Length: 234
Image (cartoon, rainbow, N blue to C red; front, side, top):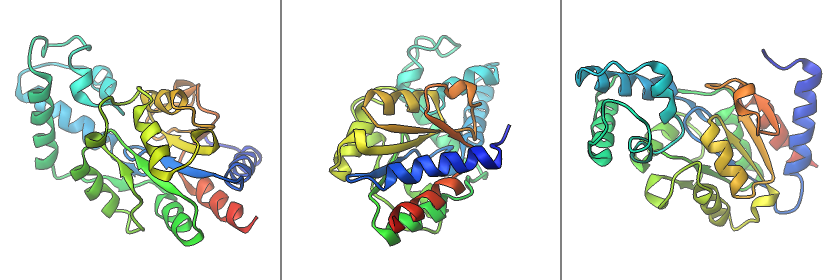
């Protein structure tokens, strides 16, 4: 269910107020937040599993969402048990490279990044993806490329707090003053554990009920783009 005009305005007001505070900034997830790529990732997993002759339900494939596959394979029961999680992940990444499906920008994503760049609001991307994927996905937005924390930068992935702690450190800001936007349960948990002060749950892939720990929920980033401009004017 989408936001009513009244509730959408309340979310915009809350975001604008937060982003106008001293030391404010944005930490944005990539897949499912800036680009609608979760279906592309799930399709790559599904193709690889099918090629191995494994019947893996979509509900199980979704357990990889927002997380590093090398950390999911060892703890998620499935036909891959006992296999090397690094080799499994590399095979899925190869399948992703071979795919012809490409992610689409989430509405408001390019506008949000452009507004941050134009108006000087600190912003960074915090993603579980490799740098190679992040570079390609961000290029589809045709917007200023913000600095990013990627797979290569972290010892621990989401839901561990390390990715968002590194995002705050990249901006040189206190995480309590920051706003994060995330579409995955693991990502929301990571931001919360890192002490991020305000978390937006993106319902591009998960329902609002599934992201109950977020402060507010948005279907896309158009409200956030407006809030950035309002905060800068304020």
